[in-house]
Image 1 (cartoon, rainbow, N blue to C red):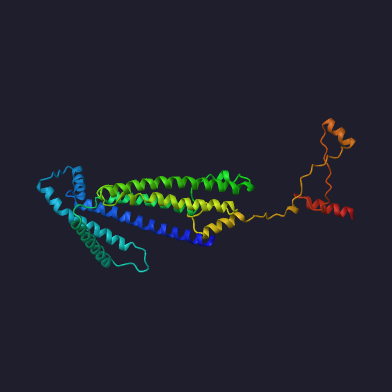
Image 2: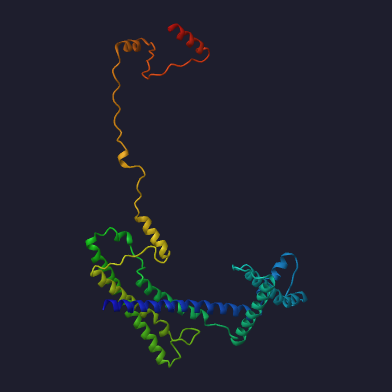
Length: 345
């Protein structure tokens, strides 16, 4: 039974992840198309405005309605086409590949890509003369779904905020009960929020039904509000079940420890960090070779002649106890050594 519940939980997690990926992609595409439509459907050219401003810095005034302004406005589309084609050529030429593309083929690809992109933009402007006025509200609705389903995914991955420094100081015998109490209280809070969210969704549904589909809609869209806000009870409901399962698991002694490196590094790096923290570095010098530092022995007592010489201030030259071989003395010492040897013989 436990294994089946784990499989169901994993399937729900995969569905949440797939939905979030699709939602983020849809948000990016819709907002991008809205910005492109606003830029190309407007009578005021951004490139022309920038050109007029730049030439104005050099004392050339191109006022609207003059012949110079009209010529500049007629030339700006071709200037933009040349700039975009150049950017396409540069992108193809600098792309990392085994065999670099030649200048001619890169230029052809840049020009062709610019023509295709411009044709698609004009098709967008013709098919949607009013633009994507609903793009901002659509992005907000998807943001709501991504946020609450993402919170549910964080529950599955055990990545919610927690005071881990306090948990490390809890005695091992009490950790199970503390984890159970924490998960159970969190599940109760999520259940209460799910109940309130269901009441709010029901209110919007009744408003939509009573107005026969004319009210209770998202502003700028024909999407009912109860569908948009359905993410709240759905997210809180899944989190209630997952925190409840975590409470039962903690009561059974199965406490899941959170990995601080999860989602930040790959598995190989995580294993390397774990191995590095577990390795004990041994010293190259064995401990047996290290001798304890003992106190220096007291100096031997001075002899009576040495003591008298020390009191009188005389310098006493101590005889060396090291036996050395006989050797010649520098600067004529060799001759004296030979004479002494002959005298001794």
